[in-house]
Image (cartoon, rainbow, N blue to C red; front, side, top):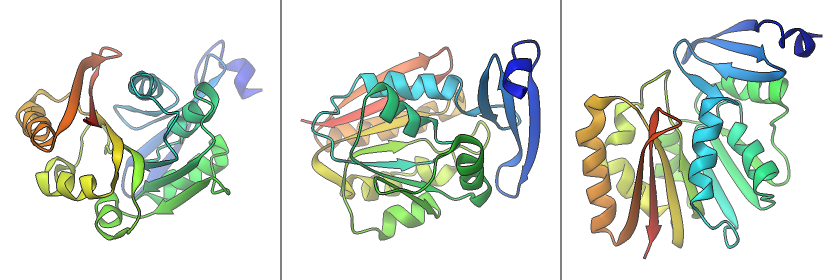
Length: 214
């Protein structure tokens, strides 16, 4: 019923999160979205932004993907539905409420090919022994990328978790104040022999940065 009524007007349910504040699960035009106070977290503009980035990558030889920032799991849906990706995915999110929403509202839950881990992305990346063919970094609290994920020490550790021929897809903030820090990240990746492609105002909002090993 909510799906049908959403073609007439949005139908929203609010959920409290200690980490992300008030989250909104909204039916709109027959599709369910997950939003924070000011940003789309899943199944809206964010899904289109990440799909744009994935279209720039060759996933044929990608056997393992690490997703830092699960949200409602729209990137998982995109990988499976739009790219027919059938290999291993590990998704990490710090917020247990987000993980519960992904499971209960969007049917995204741990399975044979999908491992969902409740952990801080920084702690996980510093402690996992695994490497991945693609690392997707989509870490926001509302509109903001937390400071620690813009620090070069995070990127140094992240590169160690990437396989030799792997790639990195970073959904960066639209915040102009972060432009200098993004330039430092781009320069750092280039200095470590990566081809770095920068796409600004994807979907009229975020910057997408893709790093590929040369």
